[in-house]
Length: 260
Image (cartoon, rainbow, N blue to C red):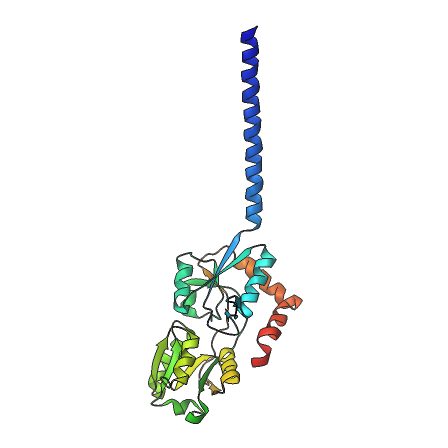
């Protein structure tokens, strides 16, 4: 009799244990589904490029690209995380799969397309040369003998190098756009060559003058991804939706309308 009771108790114990394990597995599965709904989308940028990306006085990321990235994350059900780095390190971060995408006012050039994938274009600016008004640099012919500053890794670096021999100027490369302005103000460069939208902002805020680069038409800005990224198509679908429902126009009016 005692043996029967003990045997029954052991069976009950194992049945209870199996049930508990099943419940735990179900709970774990539920937690995984919840976590999947909040998958982190890692974005890299170079936050020295207002009005596309910069910091506010509280140290938070702000700008057109930042809000566009947040809209994409919200649309696709991701949690957005942003990492700031030098512009010339962004492609490498994608190639190493450290981040999922880059929004940094990046032009979708043919050379970059060899190493990363791009979304559809979301903005097109062109390039501009800016200088101090007293220097009387009014067109590209006036650049002869001058020092032209560019940001490392940008399409402007490529463009300046291509133009330097023809128009007789020296190219000086710096890490970020804000340093270009410091170099210009301290007379270490004569001219800064940069994205037109960004340049126009500096003209308005600091009293520089400038002129459009008449020689090229650069590719538009696009979101960059690691090669063969699985999210390119869904991001393109989100961008198309934003064009149709007015989200993109609203962001451009908020961040770009006053300087275009």
